Length: 263
Image (cartoon, rainbow, N blue to C red; front, side, top):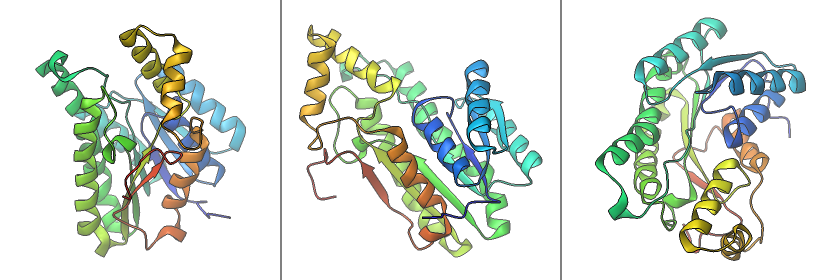
C-alpha cells in the first residue's frame, strides 16, 4: 500500500534507537522528511545518517532532552524553520523505570511525570498552531500496552501513560474540526533495549536467569514471541497517512494478543 507521505514533514521524538528509530525509518521510507531528536547527540546523528543512507530522505537531527521545555521549543522551532512546518508529530519518550510502589520516591514520580506526560503535552502544544493554520495534521502518541492492562512493577508507566491517553482522546475531540487526527499506539513487549532492561530487572528481582525471565514474559503472549519494532512502525505510518483520515481518538495495541480484555 502506497501511503503517499511524500512532501509531509514529520517530527519523531526519542528516535535514536528502538521504537522511535523504527518509526522514523518507516516514515522516511514512505517519503516523509524527518526531524528527529534524542538526548545522546552522537547516537542521534548515527541514526539520522543511517536513515539518510537507507532512504534518501532529508533528516534533521536535533539533540533534545524531552524533560526540558526550552529544548522542546528549540526542537520544534528548528524543524519548522528547516522544513517550513511539521505535519506529523510522533510523541515518543523512553519509559520510566520499573519498581514497586513503596520504593518509588516523589522525585522519581516527578521525573516520570515530566518525561511521560509533559513531554507529550509540550510537543503537541508547540506543533499545533501550525497544523491548525494549515487545517491538516497528525498527532500520534506512543504509549504502552500498560494503558489497557497494567504490567507488574511498572506502576509509573501504568499510571502516567493513562494520562497521555486521556490527553490524546480529549485532543481528538477538540481538533477534529481542523482536520487533525489524534491517535495513540500501545506497544506490547517488543524486541528493544528497553525490553532487555525490563527482563534483566525482573531476573535480578526474582533471582532467576535472563532466559527464565524472558520465558515468563513470552508465556503471556499468545503469539509466543516479542514484537518487532517495524511492526509498530507500520501502524504509525498508516495513522500518519491520508488513508487514516477518518480514524481519530483511538488507542491501538500491538501486543501479540497479550491484552486479555476486549478493549
